[in-house]
Length: 167
Image 1 (spheres, rainbow, N blue to C red):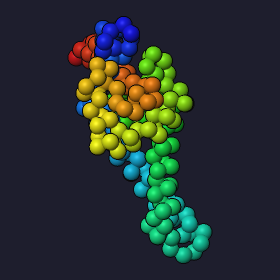
Image 2 (cartoon, rainbow, N blue to C red):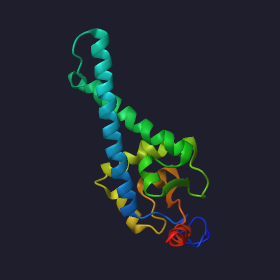
Image 3 (cartoon, rainbow, N blue to C red):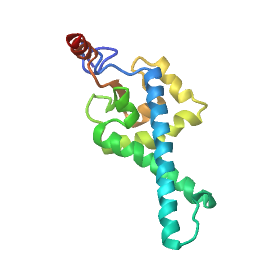
Image 4 (spheres, one colour):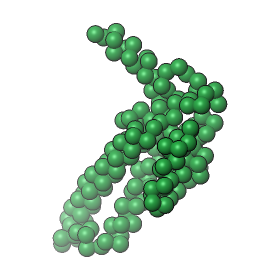
């Protein structure tokens, strides 16, 4: 690696390891998006089944199926965009990208592993996330296991120059 805090060596912010605050905000954005889209999708499913069966259908009557559907949706929401673009909606909104430790695209395998082991960082009393504060490369437990890192995916200097040029 070219520097201790960057995968690219670029003097801008792009490629630098993302900090805990930015990562947390991206996580909250993703969590809210997952819940809102699942709720909307659930209402649509209830409406369609009510029309088809001609009797009121409520997913809350099937809590196990609803939980399985929610977990499946959350996995799909995270794994697919990470595998294809290296970022979820929340990460994109905050200018973050997940990459392999060598700076290459994350890929399907690393993305799936990263999503599957992400809960470990919570299950260990949140200690998996403390690693972001303790490690120079700001990798959490799930990053270490998936051989991934989260970096800033925009060039702060170029953005500032464009902003100043407009004003």
